[in-house]
Image (tube, rainbow over all chains, first blue to last red; front, side):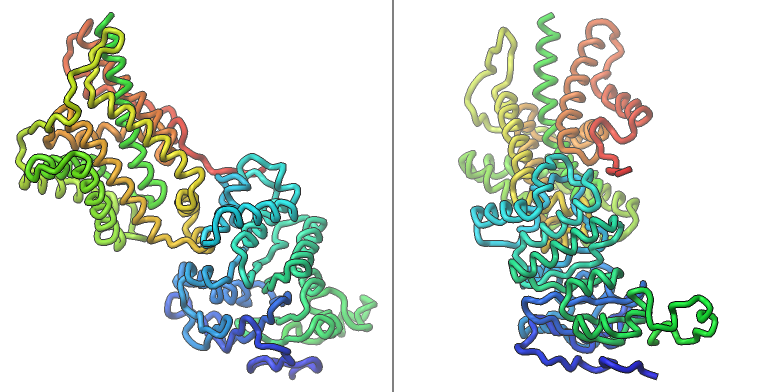
Length: 283
Length: 295
């Protein structure tokens, strides 16, 4: 049976959005290699100026959802076969990644993926590849990004030799250089020490607060992600199974149980563990 | 001793030219992962086209040269789109076979179109060989030396500072990453071939001015191969250094052979001996990249 509050979702999200969301994914289905069905009707909304997070276990389809939005699906022989992805009122499903970057969506891929044999500054300038507003504006932004990440300023060698945390900051900085309207962040905490994870999430919050950066954040680390996001979606086996505001999700017993560690009162004692027979997943 | 220095100068000048062609080769390999065995034929076709425009249509050199460059850029893009784009994702050996086929086709085509005998270029610079410290240097070679240095500088600037140069390096690093940055990989591929064909044609014209235009021009493509391997397949600087080394080595072999050994034809085989030794000792070449590994 469906868990109680806040809401179980299989249809487009009933959000009390104040304005039209900047990105609205509508019941999309994604197929790899023409046969492998990965997403089975995913819907989600990202309102402008907010951080929305997409949580879920491995293989749920979180990254695929991001790639469907950014168009990178194509590079892996995948395609959106049903539904639509509306970005600022336009259906961008199955457009090429170049087109989508130009429209203002920038994906920071899982595992940083900075260009290792380039310097920090070259990587940052690469982020501004699609911009047409002239060298001085780009230079200004370069300074701004380096102000946000002062430790990158000191690194003059090749980016491949940066630490994991610095590489993640560089990847986020590179995205900022494109001045996107929406950033898709895929597991920024991957492979980082807990302290660095904290730092990265502080940056995400700061960028959102100070620059109004709209972010769709995919995470395994639910606690961190919900700390930064105002709204969250939970995915399992290619479907959104639940969504709610930050406080709804943080307060929800199932979410606590599955993602945040710990749970209801009855978990306090190990003696009761044996009788614990609740299902572990929604699906 | 004069002969020694003469050959040394020759070696350096020819070496820079090899370096330029090797850079073109590396450019294609680095950004599109295609080993282009038809590189030498770009020189051949470029030189013939330029010769035709200059001699048959009697166009002034500057315009004729620019038309040649435009034509070669178009040819490069055409080959990339029609011949190599369908080969994306095919095994490397198939791609190599296709470029070998391309080279045979282009050589045969130019033999058919322009004949096999060498023809002289019109004397563009109208100068006799200049004297540098008592050594004879052909003005065209001197010109080619300057132009080569200029091109090398241009390549350096392009890859270090220009938007598209960075895009090419990103594409060479990882195509998916490049696409996620909004770079059109197709565009980058086409551009790499266009630049490579253009610059190769330039080298072809220069060599043609000195030695005359004939099918022998395409052998430069084969000479360039040891230079590229020596420098490391994916290093632009390596290509320049490799070109210089091969050029000088060739002429030194000539010197040693002509003075002491009398074996004959050392000039042609010396670079390939080096190629073999390099492959045994340093398979990545002098500057070839090994992946960055953080420990």
